[in-house]
Length: 173
Image 1 (spheres, one colour):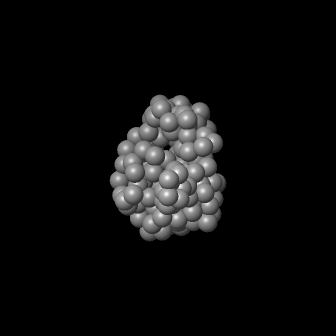
Image 2: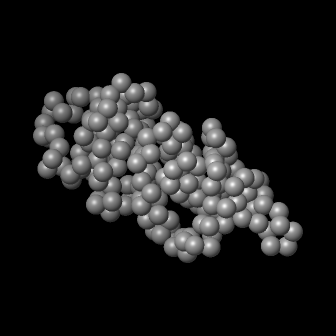
Image 3: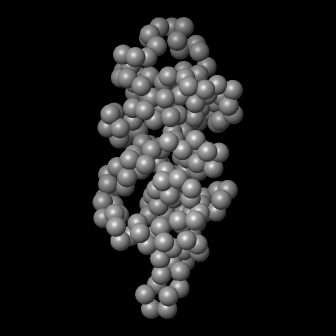
């Protein structure tokens, strides 16, 4: 799993700029379990409720548990705090796993992503007629982990956004 500053920034901004956070919430519960959530000052992991904290009034007064309310299904999921003293937004966001991004592509109806289209994205792709690059850069050198590459592919295919190293921006072809 990618915990780099770059990937955390990519996920945070992807959630703020698109509906990808809602798409994550629509995944089957078994796919959401194990997701890392960045929220306020913590990183937590979505776990089954039976392994989580007891449901009582004190629980709802603990600031970290707002992540639970915002990002988990209250009846069946909980957030196990992994790391504190971070600095994330109050909205919270998940760190998407590669399999989750691929599943969201399939749910979105882009189940033809596999070989041809993804490989062109990975290599940089070329227009057939004049050999112009379809993208400004080859993505195999730009992204250091599979999660970064698949998130970039999702954002490109679904939202026509590219990662410029700092933020998502509209692609001008």
